[in-house]
Image 1 (cartoon, one colour):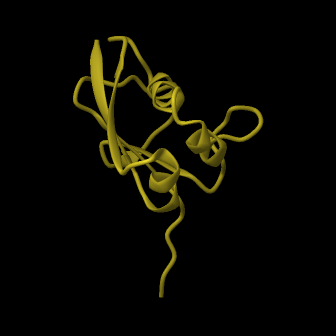
Image 2: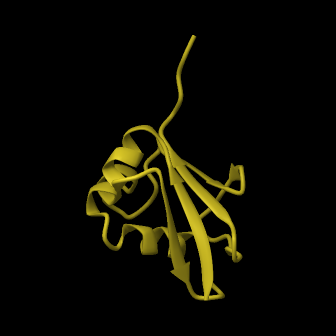
Length: 90
């Protein structure tokens, strides 16, 4: 089994019920598998990050170890995944 840590920011953390959580996935899991594990008991978060087709909504950023990630990438034990909405400022 592989353990990855999810970090959520802004309103996504609120929908998830917290800013961080660890999930366990199989040793051959992908980023998508880790997201599915995260969303298993966080339906409100799923509605915020996935569109009707199950794809990541355009306005949500997904990172793996600090770099942009794709659903098909494999995850490794100890990886940090992050979800956050766009950031604006001035």
